[in-house]
Amino acid sequence: MAYSVKLGNILECEADAIVNCVNSHMVGMSEEADRTLLSAAGAGLKNAMDALGFIAVGSVGVTEGFSLPCAHIIHAVAPRWLTGKAEEFKALHICYRNVFASAEKLGCKTVAMPFLSTGYYRFPWTDAVHIAFAEAEKSCMETLFVTDSKELFELAGKPYVKPRIVSYIGYYRDHALFELDNGLFARVDIRSEVTDVTVIPYYEACYRVGNNPRQAPLAESEIRRLMEVYTENDW
Image (tube, rainbow, N blue to C red):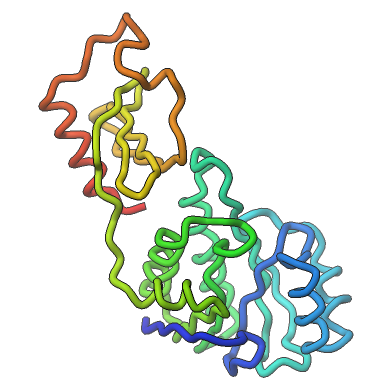
């Protein structure tokens, strides 16, 4: 479905539902954000959020909109960026899908939300925006992404360019490692029946070529195949 991006305050947006990014204990990303939300929504929201209890990462909870210009508030527990090896990309995709599924179940036609995980949770912005747009396109919602960051707003308006492989570093056991042009690294499964790509911010010494003497070096043709796996994989 269609989506758009707005620079502003999400609490002032009119939509059937707005999305509030929280942790598993229904606490917002900062004390200031919590105070602002509770002040705008009214006293009843705090009790309603407390009643939701613990919510797992990737899942959502729903309350009414109270004094906000929306019927519902969807509280999303988005993933925190750790090392890139904890399936953060997959978790963010799942979180968005749960948001849209919840909105559809509530009968919503429009939803306003931030770019999940891009603030306090420090998810790489380019990839977070790419995932947000990919999931919005697959939903049946009219989605408005709202940010108060001018830098994030400008980035969201640029075409997505997948990080390019700069060099092959080496491999260890079942994974090869490639350096990317954005400072991150792509770990690609070398098994022919598996097409798994994980983006990580650093690499361990075990990935250096020759670190495991029991494994023969990868052939150039195999390295090219793995580069194609990376290119074709859309995280």
